[in-house]
Length: 114
Image 1 (cartoon, rainbow, N blue to C red):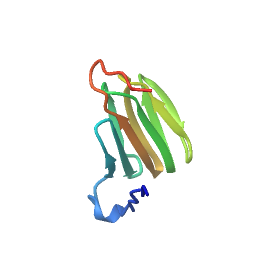
Image 2 (cartoon, rainbow, N blue to C red):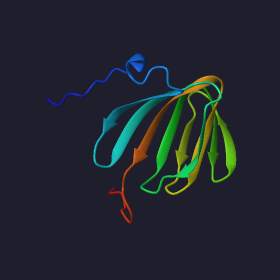
Image 3 (cartoon, rainbow, N blue to C red):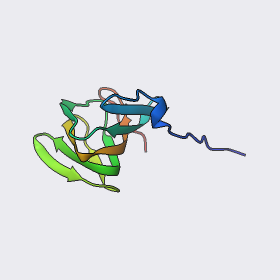
């Protein structure tokens, strides 16, 4: 019988007091999953991620996502799929934000298997 791995997030256990609380929940050779809580108004400047696509699922609050110079307002239960290589940054809304972020790590020239 195959059993799942169950992981419970305790945001108080990870870098409490920082404007960004990030906990890596899972990682293998091609994928990671992080849970992130950001203080109100915190801003992360745009930066490219060249290894693969990124996903951000908003769980609470509001996030202003910038992708290649365009801004998108994300609210709970909205998922952003950000293509490989796009410059992305964000700013948390007035209540802060909590989101799940996942990144594919394919490396240069790699193509995902289907």
